[in-house]
Structure formats: C-alpha cells, structure tokens
Length: 231
Image (cartoon, rainbow, N blue to C red; front, side, top):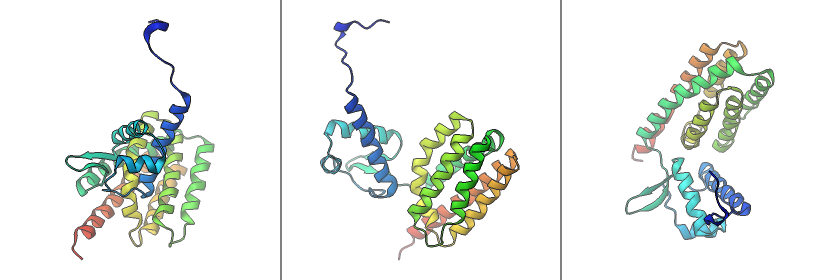
C-alpha cells in the first residue's frame, strides 16, 4: 500500500520518541528500585513534576507500564504501583519455575563458550557477596545472572517472555533476599545449576533451577505469613 503525501500522516519526532522511551525506563527503574513503593498511590501532576515531562508523555508511559503489570488502576483510588499479594506471588512463581527451568536447560544445551564464561564469572561475583549486602545489591547481582542466561539460551521467545515476567518478580525478590540466611542458601542452589551447566546437562540444569524457584517461592510465602501477622 502506498501512503499519499496528502494523507495527513506526519513524521514522528525522534526527540519525542527518545524522551518517551527514557521516561518509561525512568519510571520502571523507580518502581523496581523501590523509590515508588508497592501500593503507593500516584498523582499525575506529581509524576509530571518529578520527571519534568508533559501529561501526554506521562500517560503514554503509564499505559506501557500498566501493560507490563507494574502499574494498576484501582477503582475509586486511581493509579498505584502494583503490590503483589500471596496469590499473585504463587501464580508468578509457578510460571517462573517452568520458564526459568526451560531457559537453564536451553543455556546448558546451546550456550557458546563466551556466554558460559560470562555466566561462570557472574556467579563468582555472587558467591563473593558479603552477608551484609543490601537487598538492592543482591537483586542487581541476580539480574546480571539472568540477563546472561537469557542472552545465551538461544530461545528468543522464552527470553522475551521471561523479561516481561521478571519485572514483577524483582519486586518479590526483595522479600526473599531480605530473609536472614537466604544468601548462602541461594548461592548453594545456584551452584547446583552452574554445575549442571558446566557438565552440559540440560535436564539436571532444568531440575535444579525448578528446585531453586520452588525454594524461593516457599520463602516468599513465609514472608507473607510474617507480614500478615500482627505485631
């Protein structure tokens, strides 16, 4: 189909496109860092002032982040940051276990030597993390590990799906990684995954990864017990 010059369609401004993308990234990062806390009610004017953007650009960003599940519109309350509850956590971790197991198996099967070396090096940085590391430091280290897995697994659909899911999982990961004693346990679980990948054993990598997610889900469930118990 040929679009005539008189159709009224105008070229998009590259500056607007760049600013729109940067705004989505900035708001997403603020949510994932916890600067915009789960359950926090957001006012359009305050966000416009915070990020120095127009309402039009902000509404586009809100629509994008709502599609990712990070923002929700609550009847009679307006816009707020998604706050995971126990059921949402259970559903997310159920899907995460299957998907992450597949990605680990695909990485063990398909990753080239460069990707394998990168993953092993990232794991060594995780292994060296001090026990007093903050939840944010642990989340960032874990995210580097997953980015490497996704880049090397050779399954673009699985990688794309996991990326969309992972933003909400990051919000739950703070609950697990802030649990006393979780870091050494997490390192031991990842070590088992790494061993299977070193051996190029996809099925063991899948099984160890699914077990890692199952144990993380149990920690999240325990944390909800603690949060729901009156002081």
